[in-house]
Length: 276
Image 1 (cartoon, one colour):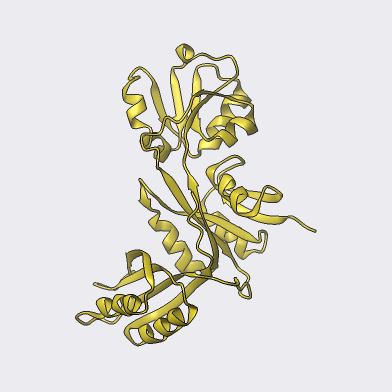
Image 2: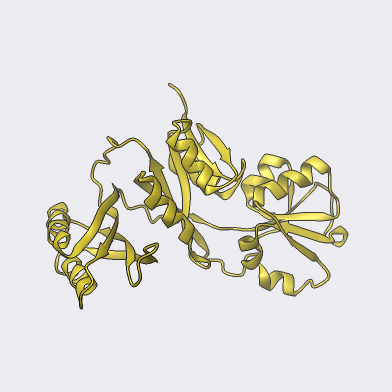
């Protein structure tokens, strides 16, 4: 059987590959992409079967440009993964902390370790495009004065040693990833969560009416995100994630909210997966 082809933003051993392994297992073919838009293009061109896309981080918040990609590409959400973000200092084997002058990583990873670097002001902290790419560069160029902030998968993949473990400031840091496919026939059995997109009609209380319908149907609203509609003043796209115990409650709520919404889309129905 052919391996599933999964497009990821970043290179091998990035957090996106780690999330892909967590969802699909390690017997997959990961397709490295330079940007989230490129992952979507690869999926659209059928050069991949799935995309793993970060959508929110417990510290940095929502990745708003990715909501725009969800809207523009109309892929189906078929799953989610929560990944604990554990950040380590990686160095070539044998390098000591005293030799280190430079630290490289993705700007979000650097921000998440700011307390650690406050203790070592002599270190030159440099932003780069990808955590795993920094680890790979240390190996490829045999840098003895540079360390990377990355995950343990990067240490294992690129033969580096962990110089300092768990340097992230918040130990309960996690990122949520969505699993996307362009296969419109992909139906998830026993789904109990959905991602929806809609606008509301421009009158008093219209959003409140939608939210009350969910509440009355005992449907949990686990996330709500708004984005301005391009070129339309005071108009917003709302992205919501909802969870239910009884599917009939969900289906009835959807029927009711249609009368209060515009451009309503079910982006995907899938199984809730909040295991971190």
